Amino acid sequence: MIKRFKSTLLVALLGLAGATAVQAENIKLRIASGHPAVNTYVNLMQNFFVPEVTKRVGQRTSHKIEFVEGYGGAMVKVADTLEGVQSGIIDIGGYCFCFEPSNLPLNAFQVMLPFGTMSPEKSVKLARAVYNRVPYLSKVFEDKFNQQLLALIADNGYNLGTTFEWNTVADLKGRKIAGAGLNLKWLEYAGAVPVQSSLVEAYTSMQTGVYNGWIMFPSGWVNFKLGEVAKHYTEVGFGSITWHGLTMNKARFAKLPKDVQAIIVEVAKEYEAMTGKVNEENYPKQLAQLKASGVNVKSVPASVQLDWANSLKSWPQTLATELDGKGLPASQVLKATLEEAEKLGHKWPVRYQVK
Image (cartoon, rainbow, N blue to C red; front, side):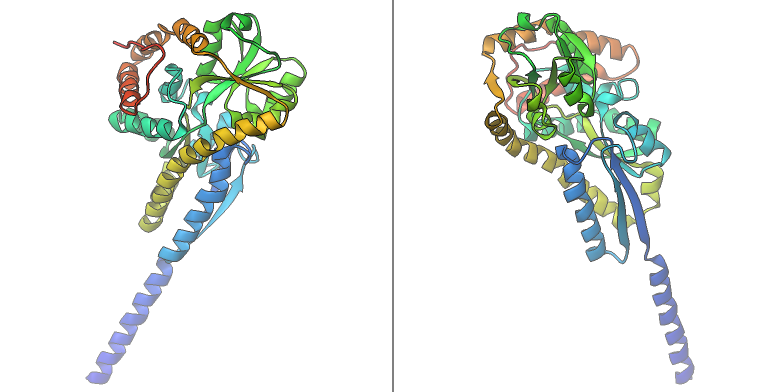
């Protein structure tokens, strides 16, 4: 009787061990961005998100995870990343919502309120607060594009780099200047000729005169060596914009073991905060690098910023009305953004009014 019990117990234990072994998975995930790893957020994907998820899964679960990485357009182009994640060509993608004006018009909400905070840390906190207040902003990824928003991504503050020197908004009239998505409207209201472009095209385009400037944060000017062809970088203070995101294919996420899901969400939250922190720390260093490389770095007086902001005074309400008419909660989002910015101590040069 005792011998039979021991045999039964041994079989049960072996069965349990076998079940545990079967449950352990070797997971392979494809992660990509159309932007190269010189971009701060892509660098953090490569050097923080991927190794941290890999390490924690190895340390805290019975599973093993391996990432196949493709940056700089190796797997998806900048304007195709949302679709790449949606279709499952890649599992995780980092991209700018600026390249999705039709699919994600409202997720670029901070661009609709220029001259916001220049602090990337505050920008990403502000954006997260608005996402928490308006669930639509996160749910649109799940409901329409088969993906889960893992993290928001801050940029450092937007200014204006040019091939020519300028001092007033009037000096920009008729000049061809590049941007992406809605920030082209900042140029249009100032009388410049806006040109849709992407950073990977910037050097050659300014070198050959396709356009003569870019609305860009200093990291873009440093990392893409734009100071070689455009020697003027002017701090205008358009604001640090959180309009990139890290998303994951919803079906692929659902198939992962729960403990792996939890680690991905945990690291993504840290990654989100880090995009603000690193950009905040790098901003003054990058301005110093530009100066050291011979770029003319200067700041416009408050009067120029005020002049530019006044030209855009009615624009947020125009956008809100247009997007509300399409069934989007635009007025709610823009009002929440104004309020959350002010909670963080920001003072708008012109206080936009949204009904």
